[in-house]
Image 1 (cartoon, one colour):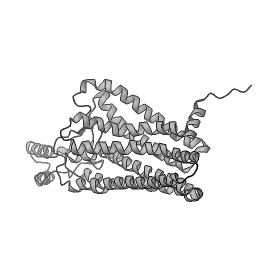
Image 2 (tube, one colour; image 1 turned 180 degrees about the vertical axis):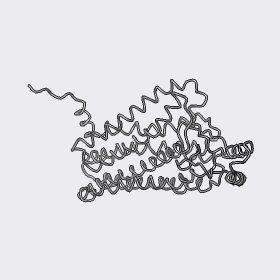
Image 3 (cartoon, one colour; image 1 turned 120 degrees about the vertical axis):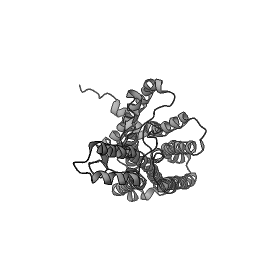
Length: 358
């Protein structure tokens, strides 16, 4: 059975070329009295041409296939830590009324994005490493790629929103509560998520009607847009240009705005007369700055490896992609737990034994 946009196609099988369309037309005109052998040969020709019906094949760690089971142990531990760390962070912010402030609402959004990224990539990675199950259907692959890239852009937007929060808190503290109301935070959050998931739709949708007649082997254990379009036998000019011109430009713009906002923040902090107040103001930014560095350094590193590392072993590309997908979600809860006093005290309160009543 062939599927198109998730719907079974019985007649009008999608074709890859004009030749396939001609064969299909002849097939549909076939009467019930048509000789069986010719009918079979026509149908076989269509199936051979329509190679896009084949599922994609995911790839684990090249040259380390025999060690996949061992590699899966630390990866499983990291995945579990990410899920627990971000899950606890979201729970604390929701349960503790002392954390019901804009800064922590944005942090909850960041943790949700990190958790989503992990849950999207974890199933296919562990299936490849544990069971050597490499096949993935086109629909599932495109959906995974959509969520991976959408969540990446969304995380950049959340870091931008968090820098805006710090900018208002330090540069305009008297108006902080009137500017960043709960309603305003919700609007900013919705805008960030809509931008992330909306920007990625245009390059993902064409993947559903592209023909795939080359090798169906992807270079990672998860689906990425840049990997999928390499397998397409179609005009992919738009899909090559759009991510560079629109998506990358948007993420770069986010970084530049964050950088400029911190220039104003540091100028304001340096004007504070009291050394103690100056230190207190800077401490509120340390966690956010660490998260920014963790995210953008891994993005830049992965970009440079893909663009300029043609002679770099493919294993290095794979390792860098895992660093990008695992390091920020793993480090963000750790950074905020260590550097933020309110979250640290909430964690201690959560895990401290409840005093018994006498």
